[in-house]
Length: 213
Image 1 (cartoon, rainbow, N blue to C red):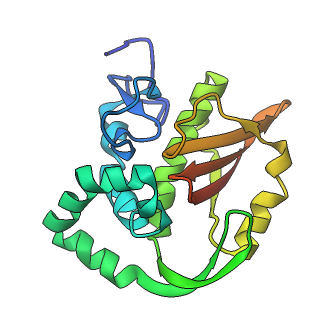
Image 2: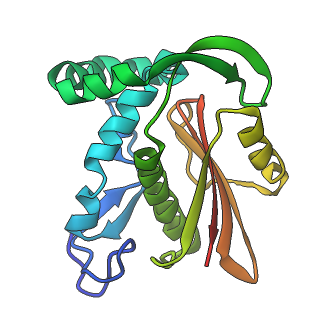
């Protein structure tokens, strides 16, 4: 629904002529929950990461996420068909598969397994948009477009250590969809632009984010 008084929370320039799902609606298998989170945005920003979101899902469904209950539902409903029809996507995925050292969410080594190397540049675009949407939801104001969102994909011992040092500061997010998406967050009271976020996708994929001016 168009709101002439509301600007897009992502670009801060265009009128918010639509609403964007945070996280993306395509991340949820059907039937989708009735309490999905949306934020006001322009049409351009709404569609700006569509292809990146498809790659994000297709990539991580070849990891532990695809073995989860909700991941299997999503694969059967959408990802399998998308993967079969998109030869470019299949080519990207096949080049990314490899054997590598793997760790639990607590950072414990569990040996070498088949893993997939994500395109982190594109994955981080998706995660940053989610962080900006969650920031608006939690603090009722947009996160400044020019401010930075520093994102870490938690898949190694050293990367888990980055998050482990901050984990005690996190508050549980006001929204949660167990098995699909959950998050924790916090901010410096004197400067809410400085915030921390821990996001979990399909009970197995973790991203940590720090925001700053």
